[in-house]
Image 1 (cartoon, rainbow, N blue to C red):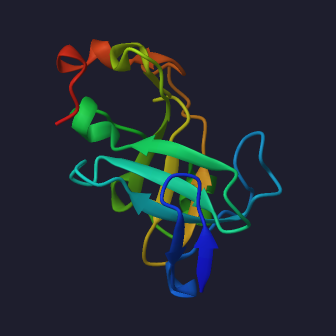
Image 2: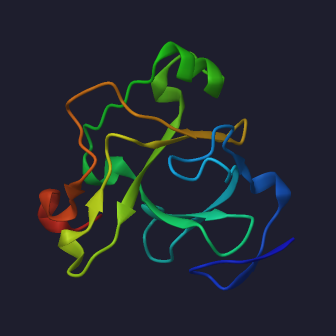
Length: 148
């Protein structure tokens, strides 16, 4: 199948690669099908969450562990059940990034990660029940703003 994307032009993709978001994303509840597309040169630490409906919406995601190695999201029992696992560490986590200039002023949302079960091709966005993470962490808070 082909798709016109926001950041990568026209791409070919397989239906098997589509992630299903049963509840959509916050503010985009009607959007339920996305692809995770890595940005070149990011070693998989920066990705695009691209709607398969068209070029928009498309979101920049980051690997939170590349920024904060001790990031420890914990999902509720209901969220774990929805994701088909028994423990939070069985899942993949990504955080939304709002890109700004200079890059160090870009922010990531550690409080509301996108959670993926790659085996089931299912994903959700959750709000973590903790005060340890916020919705706007500046990139320059993490190792001089450089993502490794």
